[in-house]
Length: 149
Figure 1 (cartoon, rainbow, N blue to C red):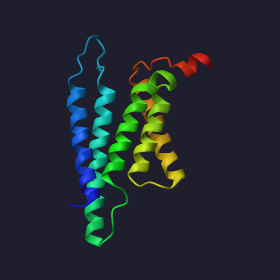
Figure 2: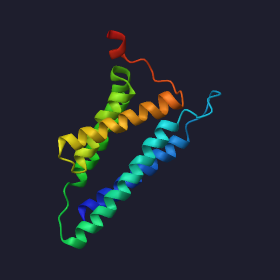
Figure 3: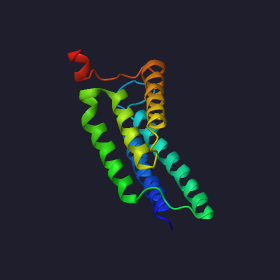
Figure 4: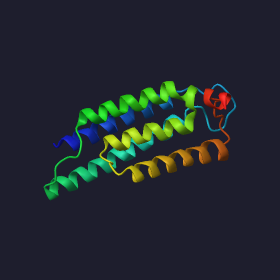
């Protein structure tokens, strides 16, 4: 098993664990969407990305290409993204935190073109904002940055 395939398997397992935890979030209000929807969407995205990673790893091994990153970098990227999401939300808000966390994850998965990395992160952040905040009407907590500005 290649290092990239191992990273895909670990990523899928981490995403599965996040999904299991997200479904365990109790609904304490009358919100029809539920409080765990953001975590469920994030975990599902991790699982889908790991499937894409595994597929590309299989294609690379068939073509004789080498892996573009080590499993350790993926683990460290997950840890950094988790820390940013956990502690950065109150300072920056959800949308910039999603941008930063996704940029770190994409970098660890081998995306080195900064324009592509920024475009994907920006589109995902905008998509989050449009879908969860505007369309579903979920509460985006007032962050410190918005309070200062």
